[in-house]
Length: 139
Image (cartoon, rainbow, N blue to C red):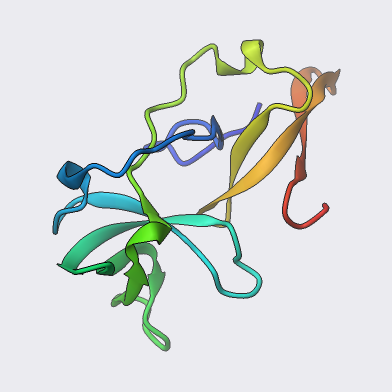
């Protein structure tokens, strides 16, 4: 079964549909997910903490990206407010049992969350394997 970091639960989760903008989570110090728009990362989401809000722009500090040439200084960047959403709820323990072919999910890959479509599961080598396909990258 897919694994994740010990503190983050499964590496697959339902998409947080309809995350409405609510001022409570748009404050400095709050955790958010940032939708990336750079080539090669388009559509993926990475966790960050809000440092400052200035109108429709937000200064964030990423949890898993570091400043160029550093392994200790976390990357800070200005992003548009519409790139943010609050973190989704935890993945329920029985999550995989309710999945159907074609369901929209997010898969954790290289510290980011990527949109995928569930293709089904099968039993192989004594364990359950779940198949997904990338929505944006046709993989």
